[in-house]
Length: 107
Length: 134
Figure (cartoon, each protein chain N blue to C red):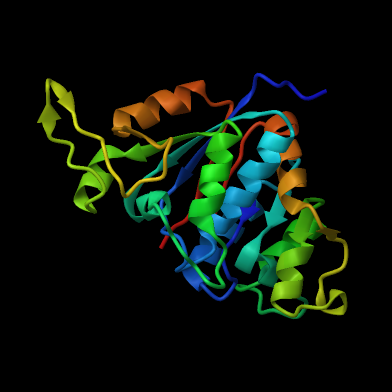
């Protein structure tokens, strides 16, 4: 899943995280790009950023873009534990999307 | 081992500059081309503004310039004919039995097609990624 939306759009995120909740137990990779990196911050309300925390707890791989974190002033200390920070997020996403996964969802 | 015959299909529906979707698209496609994949892009709705010639953003990501570079590197860019006519990029009028897609307003290399062309692109693509939204 490639997620590019801010966590403050509650309706969108309710849909996104609803999808994530229903894929527990399967191999899932979530790539946070652009405003999507804001979903990776700790301490968010359950309906806002909590979906990423639940995805991590269920074993999903979550990758967040370093360039977009820097652009938004989000330091590594504010990120959820267990996610990966990638300098080349687009390259990692292409590797997964083209060679490793059955389906790609973008939001 | 990367299969160099695989094709990434990309649809974008958001315009450049108002948000970052076009930037994300260009960067993602650039990495796909770096890795040897074929890439086909479909510009739909307001995203056809990415095809505008001579964009001059002073501080924003230069979507038009990068889109032309992607075309030069082998990416195939299709633009929605109806969306482009509506926004004044092409006339689409019949001329000598063919639709007139000539334009000085559009980046060289952009091809025009209909939504049926998009459906054909989906058939060719191994994976499809969509950028943009409300």
